[in-house]
Length: 161
Ligand SMILES: [Zn+2]
Image 1 (cartoon, rainbow, N blue to C red):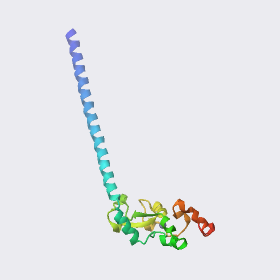
Image 2: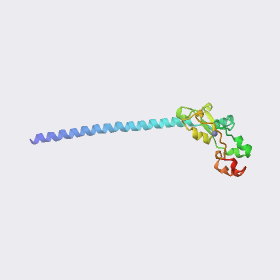
Image 3: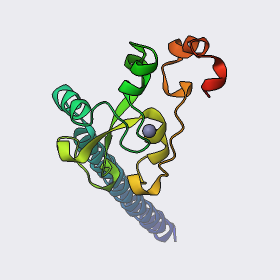
Image 4: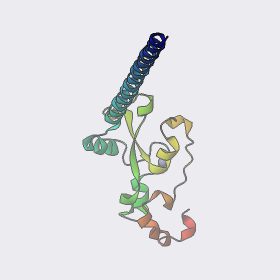
């Protein structure tokens, strides 16, 4: 009787040990999967970042090619310089990926780059294309760097937005 009870306890301990081992193995696999997916995501992020990158040389080239003019609304450095010499330097122009990185575009390809004013660039985002945006020209002081808001007094504030 005593011997039989002892055996039962040993079986129970073996069963628990096997269970613990199975749980440990499952956890190991789960951890491995998590680490693996994190590394995969990091790799994708790195790849996206490298595709987003635009070299200074290309930026300058695109600005000159597009004549410092937004390719959607048409606002330009010249427009502001004509009104107030030097103010065009404060126009916030950005280099945009025509086909966004999100859609597989490359920043290293100058044919995939264009000049946009910051307003059109925000409207376009990563999912829209130039054609999705209206070409309504709303020239105004809001295109300039905040420091240039004082330009408002230059030709009467009613003229600008
Ligand atoms: Zn624009």
